[in-house]
Amino acid sequence: MVFEVTQSLAITMNGFQTTLKTRFNVEFLSLNKAEDKRVFGIKKNKAPSISIADNNYLEVLEELELQTYPIEIETDLEGNFLRILNHKKWLKDWEQKTATIPDGYEDSENVKDIRNKYYEVIKDEAKFVESKFKEPFWNLLFFNPPIDSENDPEIGTSLNWNLKSIGSTKCTGRTQLKNSTDEEVIIYFESKQKLSDDIVEKLKSKTGIIDLNWEDRKVNLQVGATFNTVEKKIKSKKALFELVIDGIFSYAEETIINFKKSED
Image 1 (cartoon, rainbow, N blue to C red):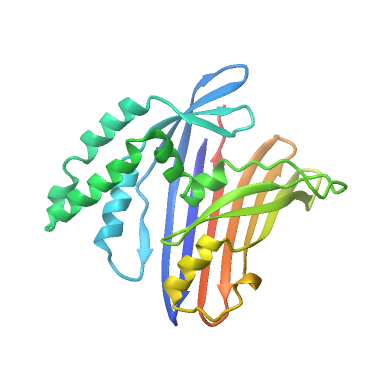
Image 2 (image 1 turned 135 degrees about the horizontal axis):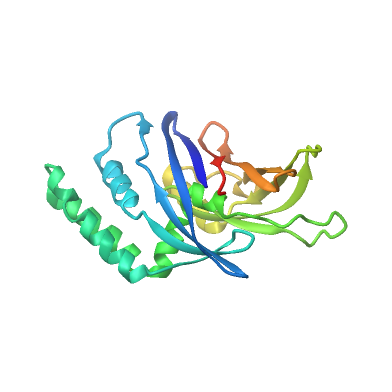
């Protein structure tokens, strides 16, 4: 399977907007099939970024992240992520591949420090998995919510979404079928979630705004997966995450995954 991923992020604060756009392909290779599990190898190509200004720090982080691939993972039959395989071997490979990255920068000591801090996160398997799911395309790719029953108001699904440099917020919502036709259907999830206390405190610090009724502020997360009912396969997935505080702050992140081709 080959996925084309398009990501865009626009943050506006105090009248200034920062934008970042990336597009890249991710390849899933089927390595093993069992009765209840699947093993895949994941590869990712270099992501060309389009941003307002060059940023060496982000460039280094992008290169360090790129070298985390290939990764072997295990999923269940529905495609839900279970675990990363062979973490110790993977970590040694990453160390070797990234050892010379600081040599390409004038401020090599600072780049070494960035690499060392990155290593401190990924050397722990659980923290490494957590860091991967802070990436919007990982979050979207492995999100397969069950369809909610209209007659049961208690049913719902939660998805943690990471706001860059702010923190993660839990988005709880419901899933339904939309736009059903003979050939495809959209599996649609939506969450309108109040801000957690942690996020509010971070936003107060970032914006300098204290005198605001934060109780009324919500994030809006919409996820749509287009499912081909004839081939019984997902065609595409799209997520739109928005947090808007009129005239003060806005955070809009869109992620689109198009499934380019399928396994034989």
